[in-house]
Image (cartoon, rainbow, N blue to C red; front, side, top):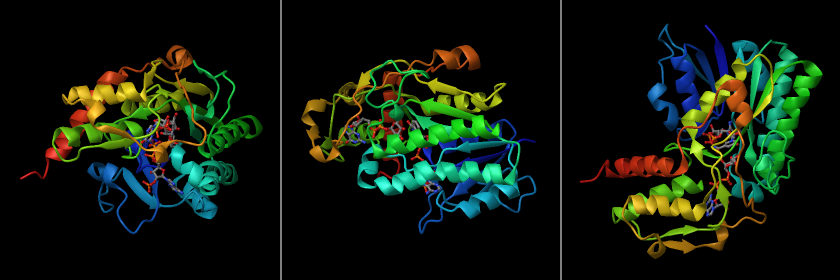
Length: 328
Ligand code: NAP
Ligand code: GDD
């Protein structure tokens, strides 16, 4: 039975990846942060009793800032595959907390790679790299596009990208960079723009709120469906050698269009409900991300299936179902 470690198992991608790996027969070890409130909501449906002799999902406390704990866990689990998904992943927040973002998203990657090297296991390593690293470089962006990050988050991810490549070249580690464009789902954090808008459209349609406050509506993103992207991560680690791959839909959608998709789906006039708040603007914006994932298609047989308008409908429908629960 293959064993995998997932950092960031409680996040959007971690939860879908756990489902995928359990379905494929893996033993999955997830690293979670100690918190005074439960942070395991996205994987609650997968929980397995530690007393069950058949247990294949094991959770361990650990933090990206704690290198000795990472060494201990790598030594204890001796995984065949490591999926490094944990990060302070919010771009706007990274401008407020650049040092923390550098420490977790950037240095956290170095700590994990170094733990693998020090323990000396033969494992395959997935690095959650990001299209945010392309930043100001115009689209379409592929594996050969120059990087120009525009946020502390993008800069920290770029450090992680080069560390993964360096461990591949210097130490022979099977290390992969998945350069993923934005991918969304009903499990997306509520402060990312797609979920924020989908949720607001549903609540406004149900008369629960009247307005949603947004920043830049002109930004262009390439929005795909998260469960398809975690399948791509797994495929990258099954390839013959470690390499770097872009995953994207290749489509361009503005935030404004996303608003329209969501509000039209619930039959509401978005212009009556969307208000501007400059607090959501970023000091430097990434204007346009549109990915070219032809390498992943050719090498891994991976293509995105769900396109942005359909994705918006999936997310609004999930919000409508969610907000109906608990109604009198
Ligand atoms: P997410 O929902 O924000 O999840 C982030 C995960 O990291 C959570 O499990 C979080 O734990 C954990 N984490 C944060 N700080 C930590 C620390 N100091 N120690 C241990 N764990 C920590 O992110 P996602 O959307 O699933 O994305 C997964 C990864 O892919 C991230 O690295 C992200 O930057 C990257 N990425 C995402 C996208 C996208 O569009 N979603 C695109 C490209 C790259 P808590 O639950 O306790 O907060
Ligand atoms: N979050 C947010 N909130 N974004 C807004 C808002 C708002 O109220 N109004 C407009 N936007 C714009 C942002 O300025 C940005 O241009 C776009 O919506 C998308 O913002 P986010 O959903 O926060 O995502 P992101 O593109 O900055 O970052 C996500 O994708 C990256 C991959 O490109 C995150 O998941 C990163 O972790 C990931 O690496």
